[in-house]
Length: 531
Image (cartoon, rainbow, N blue to C red; front, top):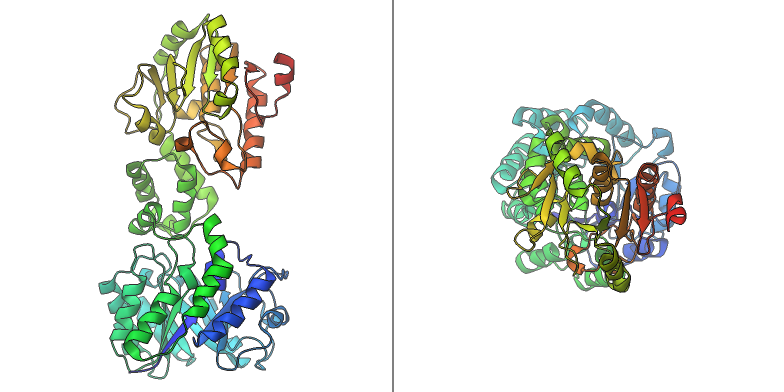
């Protein structure tokens, strides 16, 4: 059996969680503590970009990297990663002198394989050991993978690696890739494995690889605390313990636990990573995990719709995430067009010539309850609640553009329900209106129910509306809603959401007079004029 090396890639791959912003002292402290564990390789961060920020584990040149790892531990190899989608210019890579990284890992997608070959050849000539990492290895056919191995084999690299970029590779498929690699790589080339954990395969696959007892050396990538985008990566502390128990290694676990406690736990509390339903769905449908992140942040789709939308993404787009594409796919899915002309006529007859009160589920429903109650008793308005049952007030209508919220409402109200056409699983409702007619053009607030109901009221001829509970968003998530069960986590984009909604309401106020009964964070000129 060859030797098994453990490579820590927390600062590099884990950095996707927090934009690599660990802080200068954490980066330096991390390196010192990881050296105490006895693992053989430490990936310092990404080699990319044009400017250096000492608080980020991203390095645009080797001089900046040196400052973060000096003095180097002689028992550990230092590693940096380059991505062929934006490679570091070769003139920034000095001749190897042992003062910075010892190994450069080059990652590339299939369409960059020729560029990667020439790049690897050039940095190898500068004296660095190279590792050739086949991004999305599962997307290679057997022939393509073998041809890639043979191509890079002419360089006799230090290592080649199977990379499970989206956490899709199950054991049977993984073992086939291992056999293909092992049978077609020169015996002195090390075989690496980089796992993601969307389908919880990382530990089992790494364990299976070690237990194959291959004659060649192996590199197993892992992160402390399993830190990584989405469902995270193989846990270094768990796999090191497995190696200690089964292969007579002597990795020290305590420094890894200290890293978890001192450096990573605070990040974890703010930026969760780990197994979750959205990441399971993205993996099972073969999609980039950022699609799951994008849709989960919307928090509007039940699991069936979530899965349906991911499954509908064109094959060529599934592994190439862009926010622009995600916005298009989301809008297309939501815009299930219907002709709602007759519905609008009915609503106009029912709501016309009445005072209208729109109730949103803000915390001001509690704080300014008596003010709202006095208005209702004095004006006897038609009350329209947004995606909830009224918070103690009795609505005449409930407007919903969110299937997840609507599912909680059904059977709990006698109010008439107005729903939007994107809610494909909605079987019980009184009125259905066309989603795209009232949706915002701004992707971040495309299905904001407050904006949508105001546009609907304009469409049926209403000229004036009173509003309560439409408080706006606060970075302190717990004060956004009267009921914690209704919370969305928009804490990192509150200012932008408030600005976008304010701008929409400003336009709406030109044709629909808005009078806010309760306090709001939305800045609309007409509020001061109306109140």
